[in-house]
Amino acid sequence: MEDNEKKPMSFDEKLACLEEINKQLSEGKTDLEKSVSLFEQGMKIAKEIEKDLSKLERRIEIVTSDPDADSDEGLATTDFKPESEGTIRK
Image (cartoon, rainbow, N blue to C red):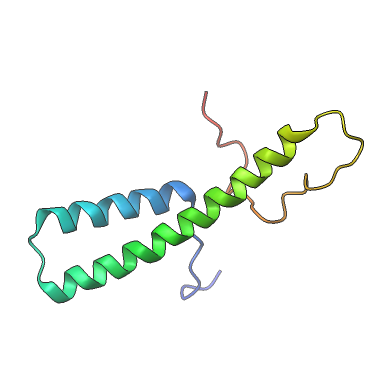
């Protein structure tokens, strides 16, 4: 991978970034231009999180809608792939 290519952020990374932006804005120690820039960045990340959650919700709906169906419709995970396997915590 080249240095100028960015790996997409995971859901947890996006959430942590959004929390950090919220913290910075809540402190009120940044100037107006920086605050607006942070707000714009936060809104972009929030929209990405919303899309991720919608995809996950749809996958859950498909899996739980008819467990006895013979069709594998919608069970493909092409729309959303986790960054790494085995990250489920118990």
